[in-house]
Length: 402
Image (cartoon, rainbow, N blue to C red; front, top):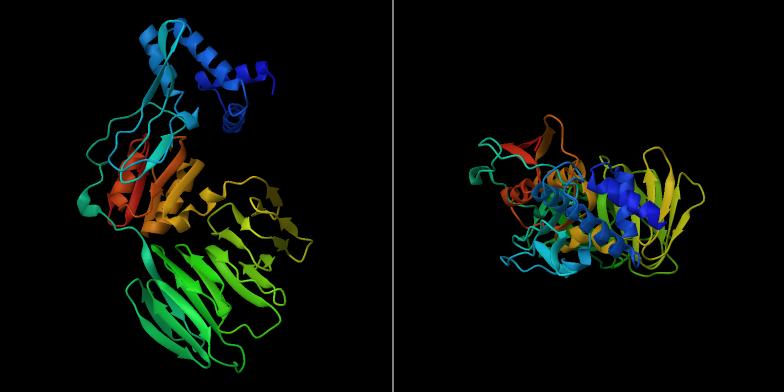
């Protein structure tokens, strides 16, 4: 990107004429050496020219501040301490004149920070938009339903501690997880299914030692003993795997009947929710092959992601932020250039609520993370800081224009 191109993007950003694609280009460009100096130079010129938008100097500065929030992140963002005061404005001295180089709206509440990236004018909340404590809903927790091979079901939660026997296999539930252990040779193939509801998550250790984490509204179907020449499971929703190595028995994952992931021993995450735009397979360690409809597969290396869109297009993305992909497993919502519907889909699954939209929804883009252990009211109060309003009635949330 040339300096003229960069200056044009910055100009469009300051005048609210930047498309989503151009915003991402600008975001990437500001990571290149020297480009931040151009950014600061142009911002200073805006403040030194009160006629830039035909407004007073004070209004110019206010408008410019509104447009600087998402940038120069490494100067401000650091691990946040609950109840600490977040940095808001970083002032710099240049040429003897003080001027603001960047400003962030950072939410620091119970370990959360969130950046509002596409500013809009804030509207005051009315009484119907507030989130009352009486409407509060607890966050998701360890809970799932185990369906045994005979069709019977067992409810699982964080406190359960029980032992289940299926033929030569022992199933133990403890501390919010399920562990399988084969005691001898199995007679025939029997399958179990573990399903998490909305508002639930669970961990399972398969008979071969493979560790599996299920996010909310997800499932995995698996044999109670791997007796064949391959280890094959079927999943839906979002699942993280740490596959036990076994070169003689490749591990196969059937994703919604449309994608197959083949591994030998590796760590990877599959997001296959049907209300998302693509099935995303992200590799953290090892090596996997992602195959679609028996066609030649895409081989992933660590840090890469295979994305299968709803129209059947398979794309390979490199240098993916794997920490953001698996943040759910570590107890976080983590957003990167996420629009409001994308954020609310996660809220819907984790708090087991219904989301409705009323009126024109603000074009907000979020960057940052929030702990998943917050209650619904705490979560929505954070989002309300960023020009979004909510009306909560029972388990139905209506998103209102800001």
